[in-house]
Length: 312
Ligand code: TUI
Image 1 (tube, helix red, strand yellow):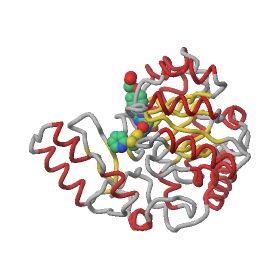
Image 2: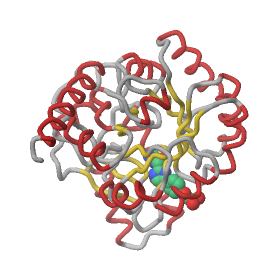
Image 3: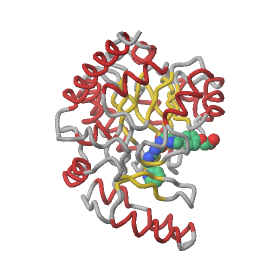
């Protein structure tokens, strides 16, 4: 499959693996890149030394391009950016904040910049500032989200920019990939879909929770605090949302949320931790290798694109 994204990143298929804090390491990223997509190492919550180690490890596991995500709310982001520039990965994605001040360092290191943006205004701003492509992430996505849906973003951002657009949020199968390409996107980013990959290092109880989840099982915490985070409904989200409704101060809510992602991912406490996940959950039926996930999505997408042509 050839799109502006496969050309830009020199990959076989137009699929990027979304960064997932505490989860996406060298092993998952390399598996996705080896399967023809673009893997990403997530650095949110990590020390700079860990990032350096994982980049070096990924280079031993794949000779294909892979990327690193910088979570711009992280206090140590400058240190992490310096490591990424020294280690010279193929590309970075930048989310959860204003990426523009960090562009010059990546450009000087020859690293492609793919910021995540939540609206048209920021999409145009990053294009004008030299972004190589833009990722539009709808509120169907898991984790920290904006307010617009993926469809509303594809409808409004794609006609306004000239750089390749990667759609994210709610993609989990080949029909979704085909739909995004028909909308004019150059590819998709999927995070949740890879959580049930064999190579994904998330706790087994987290994987099981996702396999059992149905379409309506996610909720958004933090809508009242400005830190909206989507995840699977559980004891933690019920308690947290009840406290939000009671008008609990933001500082206390932020304190209660701290460490809950790691608790679910690393400890496997899927009741008291935050099981960050997007809305498209039914395609997550079993644990399987990354390569099987990607190959099935590509086969389905090709079938959907052929069917679409027969409508004319
Ligand atoms: O970053 C994400 N998703 C994330 S980060 C994360 S780690 C975390 N865990 C718990 C609580 C908080 C964070 C989990 N999920 N997605 C990319 C994304 N970026 N979504 C929205 C944005 C965004 C928002 C505002 C990008 C730019 C932006 O610009 C603000 C500005 O400065 O104009």
